[in-house]
Length: 115
Length: 112
Image 1 (cartoon, each protein chain N blue to C red):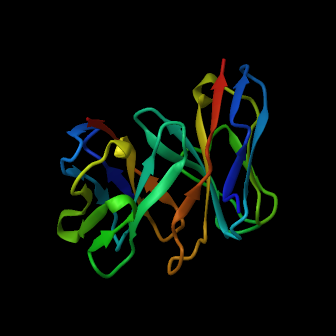
Image 2: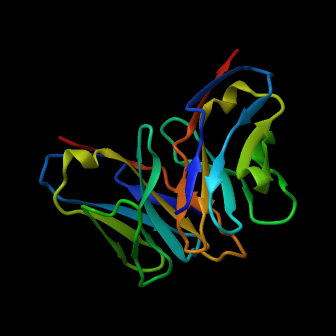
């Protein structure tokens, strides 16, 4: 039982390049999330998927796209990377119901640098 | 809109001393409240959560938190801090719409 896994762990991109961050969970959770963490800003929600087949914007969605490939996998794509997207990206999952197991489980993060 | 404030950016305590980390939230309805801990280079780990009921909740690693509706607060406490508690601590509030809002974090340094 690996929990939430993310690939890659580190990535360096040049401005304008594209890439996809991968996330998978093996806890049969309904909901999945993508956050970015910047110094002094805490975690900010980029996109989330409340259930398979649905995605919604969070607080900072501009410059990103997501795909909920199936119940296990939720990917984050940067189509044209910008230096402002230099950050640590975390994927998380939760059972997604208010009455039970509403807590989030986090992956180890992806450290992305855009030059 | 929901928001979470952690007024202390950085706290330093001596090992064995007590600890209180402050968290204030803004949310119209009954909130779901969480405290997470993040060690350097790691993801976030849940310490404890409040959904309803008893306003004093116990978590892992000897931590507890008290929900005070009148003060819109959910402060984290530990009676005796260990060197291994040095980390970043985040308070979070969840809305009914499946969105979580995190505070900016409090960095804890423990002096031997």
